Structures are given as C-alpha cells and as structure tokens.
Length: 628
Image 1 (cartoon, rainbow, N blue to C red):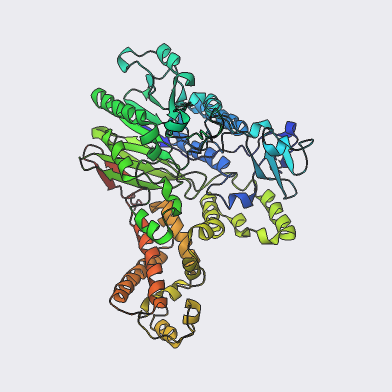
Image 2: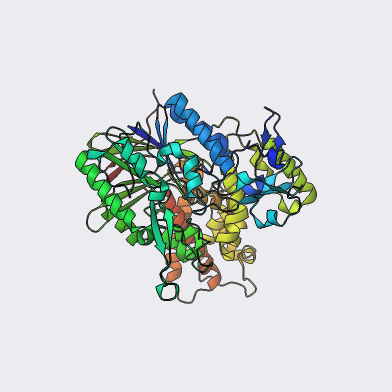
C-alpha cells in the first residue's frame, strides 16, 4: 500500500474569474484565459509561491497517478487562505482526479485553512494588473471596502469570493476529502463518535459527521474576573479505513485562542500558526486520549496506522535549535513553532510511532525516543510551493516496515506561463519605483526546481537576512568571499593589530591579512561570496539531502574544510587569555554559522529510507546503481 503526502499546496486559482466584481484579469496570450495573480514582488517576500504552485500541483498529481498511487493525503494549508474562489477550484481539480483515475484524497486543515475558526473579512493588496501595477482585492466586509464610495476603482476591487472562510465553509468545500464519511469507506470515526469497528455502519458515521457535533470548548482561564466564559470550536479530526488494513489518522491540530476581552462574546482569535502541538497538549487534551485509543485498536486489529496533520510532532531542525537560539536569538528561525521535548514525549506516550507533517516547508526526518522506550518518527514533508518542491510517498510493507521516498518535482509544464505578466511588473517598477526592483534573473529559470531556488535566493536577500541575521553576521557574509573567510580562520586571535583597525574591511588592508592570504594555495577556496554560502545554508535547512543535488560537491567540501578550520581557530582563541576582540569575535561568529550548517548537512536520512517500527530503527536506502 502506498500513500502520497502533499502538504502546503497553498492553492491559488490563477485563473479565478472576478469579472462580475469588476476585476477583468490579465489576458494570457497562450490560451486567452485571464490571470488573477499576485505580484512577483509579493512572492519574493513570502516563504511560499502564490502563483506557480498551481501548475506544480497539477504536475505532482499527474506524477502520482502515473506511478499508480491512488491514496493522497493533504496535511494542511491546501488553500491560500481559505478563500471560496480558491477552494472551489481546488475541489474541482481533486474531483477530476478522483473521477478519472480513482484517486482518493484525505485532507486535514492547517493554519491557512481556515485562517480563523469562523468566517472573517479578507483580501490581498498585491494583486497584479495588466499594466504592471498592484491592485487591492478585498472582501466587501473589510474596512477599506466599507469606507470606499463606489467600491470599484483602479486601486481597489471588492469581491466576496476573496473572504476567508471558517471551518464550516472550508469543510463543505472539501467534503469529499475524508473530512466526512463516504459510503465506500470501510470505517470512519472522529474523537466524538461513540461506535466501534465492531458495530460500524455508514448511517452511524453519517449521523456523527456534522461539525455541530464535533467540537470542544476553550474557556477563559481568568475565571475570577470573567466567570469562566467558554467558546465552542469545531474539530475536523477523523480516522478512516479506505482499504482493508490501512488506517489513516487525520489530526486537526489547529488551536485558535479566543480573546475574551472583545465584548460579551469572543470575536477575535489568535492564528494557529505558532501554536501546534504545544497548544494541543494544553487546549485539546482529548486528542491525545483519542490518539492513544486509536493506536491501541490498530494494534489489536492488525491495522497499519499512519497519522498525519499539519504541524510537526518532533524537532525539525536536526537538533540545531539550541545553537540557532544562541546565535540568532530565542525567537529567530520560527523557534516558537518547535515542539517542546515535553510535547513530543506526551505524543510518544500515546504509542503513536509514525506521523507525517507539513507547515515548515521543509524536507526533514525527526526522531524522538522517550525515556520509557517509545520511538516517534516525524516525517516532515516539503511543500510544492517552495524549495525544494517535492512530495513524500510512504510504502507500507510487511513486518511493520515503511519505506519513505521523496519525489522531486523538477519539471512542471506551463510554469513559465505567467512570466510575461511579471516582465510588465518589472518594467513598471524599473520606471516608477526602482528602489523596489527584484532580481530579474528569476525569469531566466530553466525548470521549476531552478525557479524555486531563485525564489529562495531572493527571499534570503529581501527577508531572511534583514529579519533573522544580526548586523555583524550580515556584514561578514555579505562582504567577504569564501577565500576571505578561510583567511580569517588562519589569523591568530592574539595577533597585534594597528590601533585604527576596528573592522574586517580594515583588517583586510593589513600586512597580517595579506601574509595569511598568501599561505592559501591558489586552488584553495573559491571566490564564491559569503552570501552564496548563506543561500546554501537555507537550502540545506529546507531541503536536507535533497539540497545536496543542487549544491556543487566541491563547494560542500570547502564548507566542511572551513568548518574544521574555524573549529580549530575557536579552540586556539580560547587558550589565549587577553586576545583582542576583533579577530576572536568574528571567528566565533563564523564558526557558529558553520557548525549549524554542518548539522543540517549531516542530518538524519530524509530522502529515501526505511523505518522498522518494531525496532524503532531508521536506515538509509542507497540510490540504485545505474545499469552497466
């Protein structure tokens, strides 16, 4: 049995028709359809693509069908932000693959679907017009539309289809993806149903399926002043047996915390993006009990159990989180999304052994081993909307073994279809807003994987470096080559410096620097920029072993050599009592980055591997040798 997992599709219907609301769209020459898309500038400041992932999804579905896969799970963020126009188009695509190829889809919501538990106004201010300018498209309930006379203009469109649906709207749009029982399922239950596999029938499941009966209460913890007010929220978790012997456990791990200070009834909720299982273990404890019960029943009945949800259950940073916090700060690199050790332990205590998650747009394998002997494997599946574009396939084998493979989506038909529109955007910015120009090289991408790499490169430049990297680190890597970094590593920390040398740039003009540089062999270390190293840092963080295919082998060797040189330099500096801070401090900073880079490079197997659930062991599957 094989199941594909495609989280974080972030589906946006790039040909949504909003003409009735006054937006005519952008004519596309190749087929005459009119595009409804976000700007390239918006994409390059986001951790996901908004437009080309439309084509990537079609390519991934075609690839899965070609491989004979008929079970596909969507672990959350299957929509852009729960908008009706996008959900309706996504449902039509999934229904097409179900009718034509017999594919069964199983979805569970992420923090983008829904954005909040109930319907809310929504919209985006960065849609693209035919002349290259931005236009704001908002739902009529938004303040900007309520206050706008006439509502339609060359800068604003008010369209109901762009609002953010809550649970009921999202679930109804995705009703054929496991969220509700189907007559052909062999079994289906929720945390709130009261039947068992022994007395199951479709009628009972259907009666238990409305969201009005699938809910939990979140109460005001400040009972002294607020009288313990509570709000009832839906939960779309379910267990399904689509074929004899396979149990898919879809966990709704969204936790939306109400603001009880917003009037008599709570009208505002926090998003669930940073909550995850840390919040589940406090606010949705019943899910842990239900998971434990499902695990027990699966074992008793000999079912192969695979769980999936949007949020990871285990550390996804290859044990590098403490180092990241020490170097970049406790809140950097989305550290608030990391499951706490106590959270992973609680989940492992349920007996669950295998879980597939999304949310982080990363390819990773996380393993948690409890003190009492439980092992929990978390398969972090990448996104089709970001680098590296790929999906996971789990093949369930005999003897409780699971083969996990990762399918890269390099070739995507039509992925350049919208590029002429971006060219007009670029031309408009160059003429009117040159300070907002993005790197035109992204439009020279050779294939979809190359395109996502170029997207990541601009994302590092425009967002990650300014927001996540301290000034000292940015200066080091932005203004020095690998050869410069190698030279810095060879400098003795206690070397006497002229009194006017206070920066690395000034240090590079000294005799000390020139003598150290001459000791390097001409072929040693390239003139590759430090910024290129940082891009590879993010590639390895996001892609793990998949990223190795996109980074030159010689470059990876130089990174290892540099890391070793800096490790020795820091050890030597620690032996020097009163070393001047300039050299030692900068060596320490670079050493910290390279140490984390090595952690990403030497991570657990995450591309193709075998899991023995009985033994709690993971082994790499070596790539097949080419035929002689």
